[in-house]
Length: 312
Length: 314
Image (tube, rainbow over all chains, first blue to last red; front, side, top):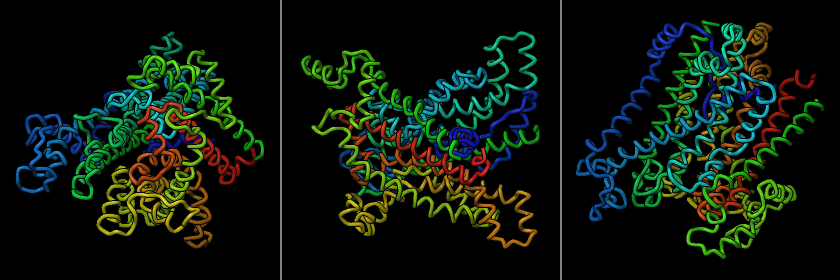
């Protein structure tokens, strides 16, 4: 078995820290399938905890302007580097006297939005070539997959840094770069799923009654690609958060006065000798969110996977 | 086997071609006139013109690519925009640092994942299995740069056992090198360890449920012999694939880890180049990174012949 077949078998993004995804999807009545999937997903306890945690992060960061104890940008130079405690600042203050808890809440919003952007860019860049490569086949498939191989040969973070170098720093550009990294991996997954679906009887039937290729792709192939894609997206969202925090840590992502958890970690590292706890909170926030995305992804995969086994 | 090997080696030629086009094409992403971007803000018209001349930006893209690629094939990546040195010289000087870090990280990952993965698969459902699975999930979620910071906090600041920053070349003092590399290698290797543990556990657990394993056991083969001889060899293909994929992640992760520990490696070169807007240097670093990954993948492909006799027969 060649490397690329192995890679497909192991899941499109397996080289980006995530476990494998299902390769094939059966056609079944949409509604009952969705309901069965939902029922199974509700039994995945770790995944539900993950959803709850991410929901909590989303709600606190969205409501931050109303519930945060202080203005995240307000400096109090008389109260810098205060320890966490039951005083004015529950999680202490940073080197400019800003309230750490408020900053964590506000930066959660940027971290989540950044992950969302990277994943969306990845999907938009990956869906058309993936669908076409899988459905059309032949030299078009060969060409698209070779370009994907070439893109996947670049070490992910190095490629992101290179793209930021030419586009200039900033969170939107940095997350576009991360989306570019995701695209070939997603395109591979989409292609592999399309290859499975392509030979199904219902596709053949549509073709035989003269349905156009774009319509077959949109109406029949795409819905079957979605489950595998959904699993992968959840896992990639976690990786996007890791990469965002990494790029912001290097000063290439979020630019001041805005902050993400990565920026907070970068600032905290500068004063690690005096205030070690400052490095702990943003790191824990990133790690827990990534863990949550991963368990949600695993839960989604298992819920879909079981259905596959039954249908198969 | 020979045909298989040759085919694999030949297959990397078009890949290298595409990688070089993509690398060189990075300049096409520069918004506006690249000469202005490269010369930096506030550069005078003469400076911009000098940059344009030096990089041959007046020529069309294919001509520029042809020139760059032929030079690159000869090992010449051109001059850096910010130092008098050549890009190839800088990379050649920095690369051994990163290579050492990556190899040591891979070693850390293998030392953790092989025993943990095997034990978890063999003792499936026990407390050890659950502990290693949880550990692996955490290892995947914890950012390696944060782990790096925490390791510095514990082992360099609270307990002054290992240095937080600085690098000792292996040739000068091997013990000093190991001391300066231990924390970076643990930080960088942790996610690889987590992923490899997961992979080995699931591949081996699946293999151990196969019929031929039951047959081997029924024949009276001892438990560990079954695992070693039949189980591991069959689980190895997936494990080696994932291990090969780690090379790319380790090279990428090295960027952050080197920055934190102040290691004068390849990743630090990349970060400095980005801060200086040294685009030719970035292109050089990215190209070399991709070539290393392609070669690592080739090595992985070639091991399939060993693990999967069917490939040899073809």
